[in-house]
Amino acid sequence: MALLSIVLPSYNEEQNIANTAQVLTDLLEQEKIDYELVFVSDGSKDATYEEIQKVAEKNPKIKGARFSRNFGKEACIFAGLRLTIGDAVIVMDCDLQHPPQTICEMWKLWQEGYEVVEGVKSSRGKEGLAYKLSAGLFYKIMSKLIKVDMNASSDYKLLDRKVVDVLLGLPERNTFFRALTFWAGFRTTTVEYEVQERAYGTSKWSLISLMRYAITNATSFSTLPLQLVTIMGMVSILFSVILAIQTMVKYLCGSSVEGFTTVILLILIIGGFIMLSLGIIGHYIARIYEEVKGRPKYIISEVTENIQGEALGTWKK
Ligand code: UDP
Ligand code: MG
Image (tube, rainbow, N blue to C red; front, side):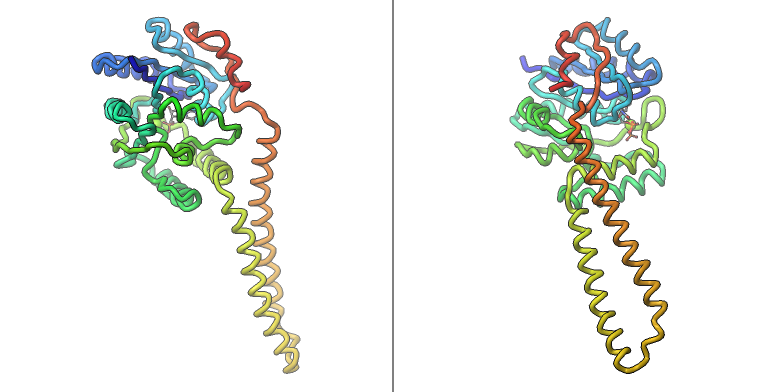
């Protein structure tokens, strides 16, 4: 019988673990799907890992790992993928905002032979205005950059073992899970789902963390911002040519003393362009620097007993 693994990144979710585990096991047992749940506690400051341990003791199909500190959701997803052994793997939030019923649809599509099933948001659920605007802008820019419609996409998806192995085999440290499955290709289909209200607790994203996430992902997935630097340079050169001609004409006409405003403006504009460009290049150098250091994406400090000992060292790979 095929095994379904579910990866659940959890950060400060002590109130959600027991409930989520219950809801999922009930559903999967009712649907007669053979399953395992893999919770990864992302350096939670509350009792998330202890809660995971509790549910894992009661049900050997539930596994858990704990990070030595907060490494972010991406790292959690990849650690979870690495710990799974299923023939198909679903990644979902552990706050039940991704409706569990969709699992059955995804599972059916997988059985029909699809290798990637993307969860697509039919609505974005209840979100603050600032969040909505910033997330909206982020997805617009990202969609343009990587040429994939990101607005509706999410981290809720099913991957075949083949695809999981491809993703785990990628050498890069800065990953963007959501876009990587598009990049990987394979037989892909989508299912729509309604984003649910959070069961307990609050969203773990602040505006700043969201912005950092956006910049990291944009620079780790696209080199277009770098080309933007070239374009800005070309535009400045064009302007300079026009202004050079104007200045020459003025000089020849004998009225060359004025133009102080133009000089100030030019310095400001070109200075602005140069600094912006340096900033963009700086981001890429930072990415390269991080990749070159070759540090692991995450460090697992503890795993539940039903995970084999060797799993602790798997982050080295
Ligand atoms: N999460 C995580 N590490 C983090 C932040 C969030 O593992 O640093 C997890 C979190 O526990 C949840 C999922 O990522 O399962 C989505 O987070 P959240 O619900 O806060 O985001 P939102 O649903 O508001 O986008
Ligand atoms: Mg959530």
